[in-house]
Image (tube, rainbow over the protein chains, first blue to last red):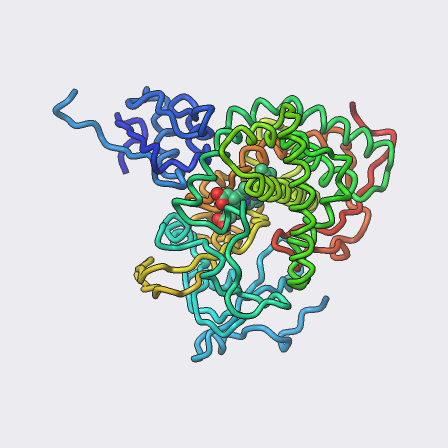
Length: 77
Length: 417
Ligand code: HEM
């Protein structure tokens, strides 16, 4: 497995989101929920090193598979 | 209850025989927190064929990865009318009726999505955390009343039931003083020994009560969730149904976790001492208790299509029983799974389900448990069982597992503010 602090790029799909709140619970610095529908709000698509491990965990926990994780394209640095 | 290997149940022979076994439900191990031994014995086999009450042959899922995959897959439906029951409900034969209006647990997308979207904004992590202070106040009130009534009380009646009940009532805007109009009905709905007719009557009575309440909120809105929802496009019937679901779910879930969780901690004094020594462990203790106790079990789904899961083909039309308690004891996911260990990372447990139906009230339940359990043990440092553990009556025939009552006591001069 790669280092949990390796750079990463996140994207979210609000259509798939079920509003369970696992991401906001697990990585509150990276994810929030809006007040109307409780759907995911991505605060930091490229989270700081100290929040990357929690962000990765949130990706794995999301019950609706609404968070995608890509290693940042090596060409777009 | 004595252990009798010749009593009805499955033996190793049945498992390999042609006739698929039924769902193991008998907790005979002597440990009230452990799943039926036949269930966890299947841990190296994530899935197998299972016979349902009406003779249908579907699946039983006990592996964590398979359970997660199925619960996350929209090709597995939650619609009641497609399900076969693992155990008979007296008075029910043939196809199950579809979900009554407002019971979103029995709906699929897109109907489910529409209702869920109206509700998720009211149960966000942030909103529920904002209730922390209120939960703390109510906890103190309940503990005060318990201290007055004791020593020697039933913890279920004195603490585990009233706290979540007060909280869900306040949140929804349901007067707690009306509780004789809904509490017993909710109990009947969760009771597996109740027949279809009494369940139907309980459901009608609950809807009748909520229907009246919805009309009152429409006429005179107050600052609560039901009043809030009257401004959405939901009909009165939908509002009453959703209100009934939230009330029932709020009354009879966290209460069982609080009482059974207290019982589990009192039975594992090393774990309780560790929590007492470091209240910072409260959040992960709650996750571990959720995993270890898995009170809402099992979850049922129906395959809409032929689906391959973990190398096995599940045929369209098969009912799948996802055993959350077995999945949460899968040694491939949780090493030494039968040990209550508040230092472990229990995240990823399936106690709140998984997929689009994952518990709507989970953040509320987390706040309640994280506040209430440490407060209880802080107030009563000498809290202990007042009956032999094997005599504590268990909710063996309920959709939500727990204890029926939990006799506890403490030394009177040793309580803390
Ligand atoms: C520790 C306590 C609780 C446990 C263990 C629990 C467990 C569960 C589980 C396993 C499900 C998924 C059902 C399925 O997939 O078929 C669920 C759904 C649900 N829970 Fe909870 N629950 C708890 C507390 C609450 C509370 C306090 C509320 C009240 C607001 C609540 C409201 C709901 C609702 C409305 C659903 C249906 C969600 C949907 O279908 O989209 N639960 N719960």
